[in-house]
Image 1 (cartoon, rainbow over the protein chains, first blue to last red):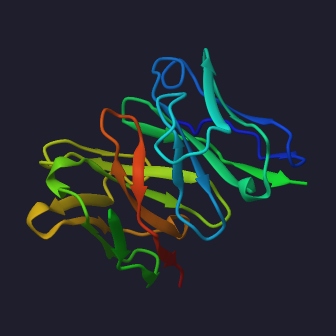
Image 2 (image 1 turned 60 degrees about the horizontal axis):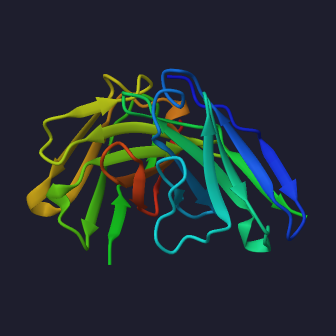
Length: 109
Length: 119
C-alpha cells in the first residue's frame, strides 16, 4: 500500500482555523470509516486525537474535528493555538491492515 | 496507568540483526492487539506489523516481510520484533503501539527506541 498523501506543511495565525487533507484511494480511505489522526510534538510519541473519522478520545480538545468525503479525509483545527504546532499524521485501515499518511507540519505564525 | 516501554535499539551494521522488546503495564496485555510502527529521521510514520492478542493473526508491511518477525509473550506482558538482514533504510525510531481494536487505530504508544543501521 502506498502512503496516504498529506500536504507537507500548513500554517495559520493564532485563532484561525486550518484544515489538513489526507488523500487515499478506494482501497483504504474511500472504503472504510476507519481514519485516525495523530499529533506528534518534536521528540515525542504520537498521540491519538481523532478516530473513526470524527470521534475524539476523552481529553482531546473539541477544537480538533475530522471529516471524510470520498477518498479524502480531513482534520480541522479551530481556534489555532501555539501548542498546536506539531506534526500531524493520518492513518487508515487498509485491510493489511493499516497505512499512514506522509505527515503534515503545522506552524503557528 | 497504561505504559509501553521499548528497549533494544542501537547501532547495527548492514546485514545484521536486532531484537526489540516492548514491555507493557496498566492493562490486560492478552486482550489487546499490538503493532510496531517506525519513523525514519525527518519522515512520516510507517506501520510495520500487527499481532493479535493470541498471536493467531499476524500481518507485515511489504517493506519488512520476510526480514522481520513479530511475537509476543502474554505471560511476560511483552511484545517483540526480531529484525534480520537490516538495511540502511531501516534506520528509524521504532514504536510499539496498542491497537484500539476494531481496526480503529492506535490509542497508546511507547516512547520509541532508535535503530541505526550503518557501517
